[in-house]
Each structure stands twice: as structure tokens, then as C-alpha cells.
Image 1 (spheres, helix red, strand yellow):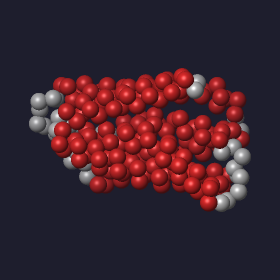
Image 2: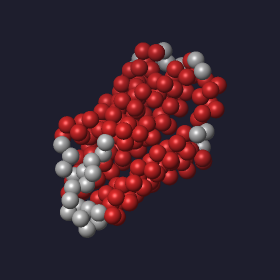
Image 3: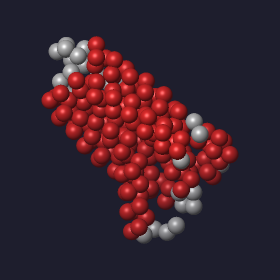
Image 4: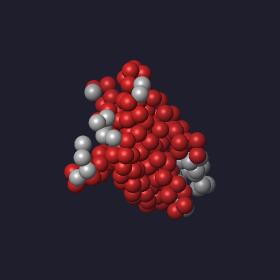
Length: 195
């Protein structure tokens, strides 16, 4: 592979494709916490961007070192995403139903939950390491950085979009956010089984 305009365009398009799950989860987080401060929005987008960049690099490293172990692990990716997103989506759904008529502030998303969301939404990006296996490490790193920048921008938009609707939906937002997380987990699971 060589450095050209198509490399950068393909990297950006790959970043957009990989960021869609992270966008949806970011929107769900914004729905759940409509009064979220900008600093936290940046932090959420940063976590998703980090994992979306780290996973393809990890996949690239696996291809060049321990490929036989990665292929054995690959079949568990849909199950892991389903369990993690299903758990956190179910928790948001239950909390939303319990506090449906309450005017008190919703619980905010914590760092452990955010890290799990970051892993769950980016774990399928491990397989991108296979598609970039013929890149040298600098090209793979540049692609990962482009994916991170695209993911960051998309996730910031997702959180702000979720916050806007979260303010309008009030307490129903947590229920909607939980349903979205569960739906994303199911989508990753089903598409992982089909492929």
C-alpha cells in the first residue's frame, strides 16, 4: 500500500463506518445525562476515539505476531458486545423505568461503564487489523489516528444530539438510551453471527 489520496479517503470512510456504534452509544449517554458538561462530552468522545484507534492497531499487531490466537477469539466478539451493551442498556432501562416520574437528576455515567462501552463498541474494529495487514506500522498508525479523529468528532456530535433530545424527553430519555444500547448490542451480535 502506498501513501496517496485514496489511503486518506479510505481511512476516513473506515473511521465513519467504525464510529457508528460509538455514535449511537454517545447519543444514548447524552440522552441519559442532558445536563452533561462539555468537559465530560470531550472525555466520552476521547474514550471512544482511543478504543476505535487502539483496536485496529491491536488487530494489526495480532496479524503480525499471534494471528492463530486472534482467529480463535474472533468468534466471541459478537457475544462480548451483546453481553456488555445488554448489561449497561438493561441497567439504564431499569433505572429509567424506576425513576420514570421522578424529577431528580439521573445518575451520571461513570468511568468504568464508559470504558466498558468503549471496548464493547470498538471490539469489532480488531478485525480491521486483518484488512490493514499489508500496511507498514507507520501507515497502520496513521490510519488508526485518522479513525480516532473521525470517531471523536462523530461522538461529540452524538452526545450533543442526545443531550438536546434528553432535555426534551426528560425522564423517558434513560429508557430510550437503554433501548438504544440493547439494540446496538443485538445488531453487533446478529451481524457477527451472519458474517
